[in-house]
Image (cartoon, rainbow, N blue to C red; front, side):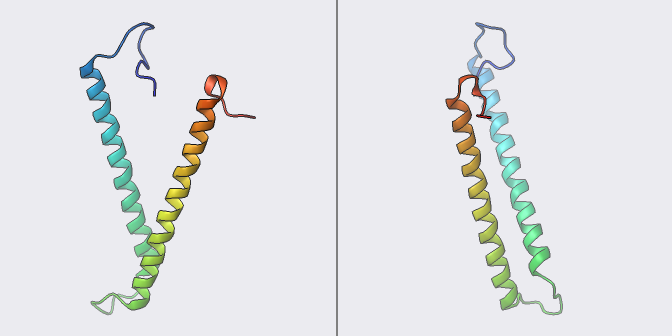
Length: 100
């Protein structure tokens, strides 16, 4: 990431500005992970929990939730790998443009 984004040429970020930027990035990453977790819980609960007649979670519901969570995690890992590959390709190309 270019630490001089939005700054005049030749101008450097101060240590204070760098710390502030790092804090904002960390907040954004935390919010993104929190949203991903909330969506995962909502999606798997809606898909797997259909019966509210018992206080206990049924075996079939546990299995469904386990499969749903595992599938979602595998999907997220694959998406992250693809983003990393695309990022590497863009960084390796002149001007950062992907091949057409």
